[in-house]
Length: 150
Image (cartoon, rainbow, N blue to C red; front, side, top):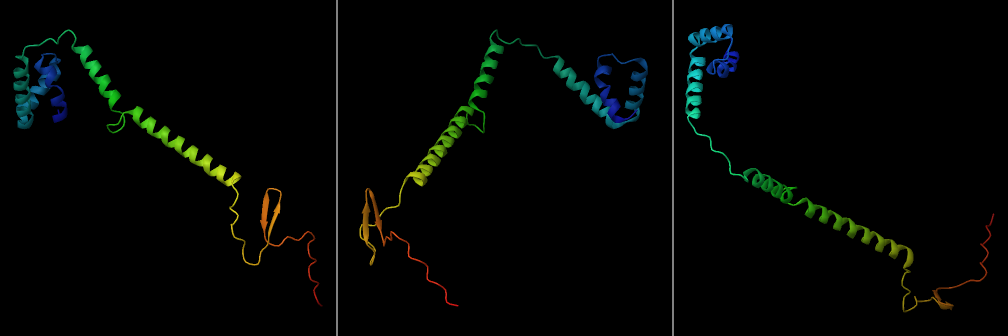
């Protein structure tokens, strides 16, 4: 018998529940192995110490109070001490802010026009056509491109 098997038999041996063959094998091993004999002695003493303790029944509402405490702690702690509701709210707020920012930037891109300088650029002329002001030369007829010399 090896050490691990011997230790596995300690409980059954103490409770007198081992079959005769296993009991004899364990007793032979304990007689031949001082390490397992010392462990068996420590095991036996520990069980005897514990067996003398009296059983204390829990109060009537003990289970209910423990369940409530676990539930409350679970609700408060979800993510590194933060409540999951707080994390969800923070993520939702961030997403909404990003959506609003994207909508504003899209509005600026699509519907805003560049500002027209108050002073015309030197040498440029200012023309008004309805609501639109244009600065610079306007040619109703495009000028023909200069011909290339061959």
